[in-house]
Amino acid sequence: MRRVLRKRKSVTPKKRRLSKLDHYRAVVRYKALEQGWQTRQIFRYICQLGFNGGETIVKQYVRQIRPKPARRPALRFETEPGVQGQVDLSPYKLDLGGVLTDVVCFSFVLAFSRWRFFYFVLHADHFTVMLGHRLAFEELGGVPGRVLYDRMKQVVVAVVDDEPILQDDFARLVAHYGFKVVVLEAGYKEGKGKVEKPFQDVETFLEHNTFHSLDDLNAKVFAWRRDELHLTPHRTTDEKPADRLLRERPFLLDLPLEAFRCEERARAHTGKHFHVERLGRFYSVPPQYADRWVTRCVLNGRLWVELAGEVISEHALRDDEERKFITLPEHEAAFREMGPRKKGTRKTFVAMGPAAQRFAEGLERLHGGASTYQMTQILKLVSRIGQRRVLDALRYATGYEAFSHTAVNRIARVRRLGATTGAVEAAAHAPRQHGDGRDESFALSAENTAAQTPELSDSTENTLQRSLGDYETLLRHKAMDSKPEDEDGQ
Image 1 (cartoon, rainbow, N blue to C red):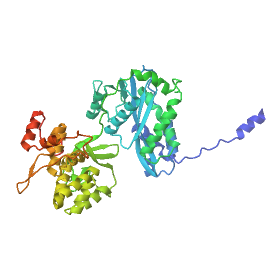
Image 2 (cartoon, rainbow, N blue to C red):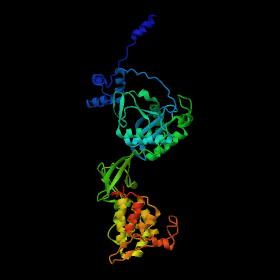
Image 3 (tube, rainbow, N blue to C red):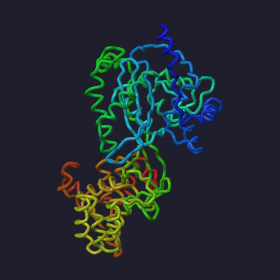
Image 4 (cartoon, helix red, strand yellow):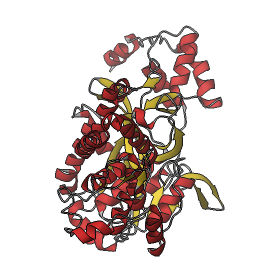
């Protein structure tokens, strides 16, 4: 016993090693407890004061001194089929084709079946959030009765008396699909655990795969959901989401007949430089559409330009500082080919397609050297009403051998009004006065109109030589709307 006691007396306590943080503990305690700073802010601050240690010991000390918040109680619940969906967003930084890119994952989950939809976008504005909803509903084939959100700014502007005030464009989407928006209390993430938990699976998937582009990322995510995620029994339900979806789908709301247009749309002017502006950058359109009012559409990193409902140009949005004007090579080539020379005008004209090629040959046979003027006038018509309608008029005019820009203009107008074949024939054959007083008349060609009009006899052909006054009378008898077109052909 004495030997043991002597041995205990001989043992000297070890001295505590000094820590690099010792001289800064008071500062850390004040910033963490009194001012509520985050650990990274505290670390940067004490580094400016001379601290040369690591961030880990700062985190450990803050964790020791900061009181642990009480966890809010959460009640687990299950919903009936078709009743509820949940939506959330999560940002990531991914290597896409060797470029470190910030992306955002849109997540939609059906509460009953645990069917999950993920879609990655470059910017999480309200237009791309609406796009995520539309794609999820279309793939699902229906819409749940309610959709649960936190107070994301893309959806909710404010909450007044427990009633959410929705962002204007998002309110259009809600009215289009007919579901009800449910907004959680601020900070109550436990209320939408069904959409929060799947992000862990997303992070695991991203860590074990490589992606070349945003489209490649979304394609691989789609295959992963289809072949693995929805065929694996869920941890809570012990059933495959694909099987539960079959039971849930009959309870979903039906999709509207028309798809929702969720892109940003704005009226823009192309100017003499045939570009449209967005956020200080200018994107090209074909040069024949210079100095025109068009519709500029933007969605998910893509910009396109519409004229009279026809897409005339498409671009990927650029954010580099070097280039202010983004001109597509084909637009620059078309501009260089345009000019007063006959060769350039004809090349631009026939580039519209085979119908323009056949009409150009007819113009040259009938008008000779004046055919360049005719082509120029038709190209101006293209810039006003769009290439699609002009090509349609060219096919009819070629069939009726009505080789003039005035005939093409009349046919395009009549076709827009939904006229009958007889009215189109009358428009093609309305006589034009030449400078020497001669009337220009045209005969029908059966070569290119067999699929559109029946074969005509000689007597019928003669009746088609109507005056312009007779043609106007015919239109009035058809009770057609004669409202003039605007510059865009609307």
